Figure 1 (spheres, rainbow, N blue to C red):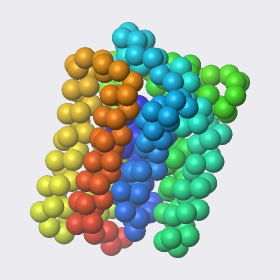
Figure 2 (cartoon, helix red, strand yellow; figure 1 turned 180 degrees about the vertical axis):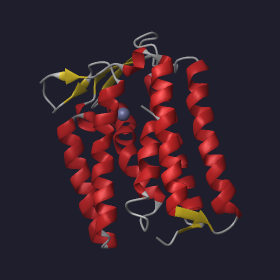
Figure 3 (cartoon, rainbow, N blue to C red; figure 1 turned 45 degrees about the horizontal axis):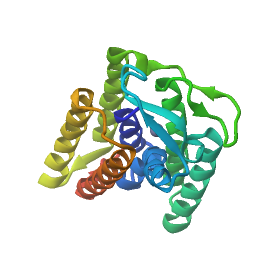
Length: 219
Ligand SMILES: [Zn+2]
């Protein structure tokens, strides 16, 4: 799943309006941010295999440290405690915890059975939504629409950056998402890892920037 994770971050603003969108997005994206460095370090493995599912050319052979349910609960607890300690904002810490763990649930729905429960064996699970391109796009598109709707209900732009920075961000997410369907599979694992990591850092920085130019609406 790709934009579905962004949808969770946007929607979380409704429950934790004082937390930066940068943090609220980093939580559901954390698993996919840990994954590229873990691939580069050789701790996790992926095989580029066009047609693996209809939606992705990736055969996710081994990624228990970034993507098992147990490890995501651990990462969620570390991230939420650190956030709570730094900010003192309880609702934000809860949103971070739920966001990190939500990654497993959403990937479980989309991936073929390759999602581990814990490192070191055990069953691998997945409902294989990725076998249907329209199904995947409808589910993720609907999630993004709902997340963006909740975000715009929770915040309003204070200036042009808050308004156009935000809407262009949503447009870029959609273009990246659709464009990815028509692009060639990545040439190699290190290219995949670097492009993924850089894109995630840019997208988080950009979200933090426009979000700082929006204010919470009074309830
Ligand atoms: Zn993932």
